[in-house]
Length: 461
Ligand code: GDP
Ligand code: GDP
Image (tube, rainbow, N blue to C red; front, side):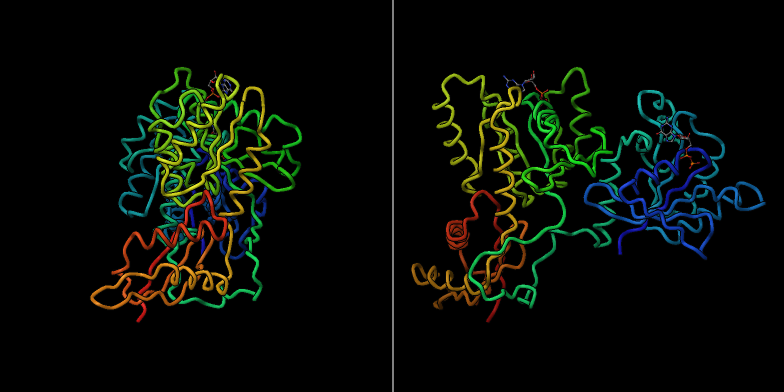
């Protein structure tokens, strides 16, 4: 069950506008729920990879004859009953009205999980209202613009947290199963399987300020051949942009985060880790952009490690390659640094590009597709265990308390990233060096270069 999100507030604050934005034209199935109340709308909401039910209460204000307060209370009661989280909207341009205050009083007493959204905050017109909103005592107001789609990243964080707490969001964080099940049974063939994924490849473009991220995004999207039909209604202001490359759908996530920073005239030199982390969480593949003239500084490495720690596929774009004079030396230097600094994942792919000239972008996107496929790979259990046998024979696990540690069996419990379980007789006694021996072997044998690999040890007698 997806989480339920109720949108409430006095008339005219923008509830319907938010409802429409969250449910989107792509998910235009606004289903009237007959028999519940004739005025309420429910729909499937979606921000990036997070889906949820949205309950819109707009229009309910007119459904009853009694006082507005009573009507609003009824609306709230119903929302509170059903929702996992309540979004209370105010109109930040109008400021806090007595009705808003009355509403907030009531909510504070009922104590539902509630987030205060100060709507119509595009531009600066909402700033005064935003400040007033603190006085409502519902926590920090979150500035958004339902009409312009601003603040959707913040809303995503809030809703995702609710979903995670309810255990409804775990597409790649779930614990591997203890027992291999039918799901992992292979068709008996020896070739590796790439999991068929229907959705687009979610790509995040991250990097320090001024490395050329915005230039690269504009280049990628500016190419007519890249733009697709069905999503053409989505503007570049949207949080997501979708296009096709070699017939495969790619979705650029968190462009709003990019734009937000690009718009600031005086660029912040400090890297916004919160923005980057959010983009990384959105993504399947993280495209880290470097300035080739200042390659792999500490901050670059921090982002790279963040992506790998989150289990994402990583591709590096060494941008501004046009400005490099000694390209051989630069190539050597980058290789060296990658080898010595990103030791947990061997072979992270990198591609020299020039966003300004648009050169080598095909190679870059090819690397994205290839890395994504490796990240999705599934290795048949029979093949995995044949390989394991050879590994154990070549280099047996050490003795622990006089007995040999036995690895009985291995299975890939999931992809994205490739995650394996090994069933071990004395799991706690298997040294890290041996785990590294196994993960390194997996990488070499099954071509898993450049993607994070997870290996969980399970205790088995
Ligand atoms: P509801 O009665 O709460 O459902 O409010 P609506 O969604 O019908 O919006 C009321 C009015 O506010 C409409 O004219 C909207 O176009 C406008 N509106 C909604 N969101 C925004 C926003 O983010 N910025 C601005 N400037 N106007 C908005
Ligand atoms: P962002 O902060 O990462 O979004 O970086 P921008 O896209 O705003 O670019 C920062 C600066 O680097 C701008 O002056 C760009 O013109 C310049 N730049 C971007 N890509 C290239 C490139 O491929 N070659 C060169 N020489 N300059 C570039």
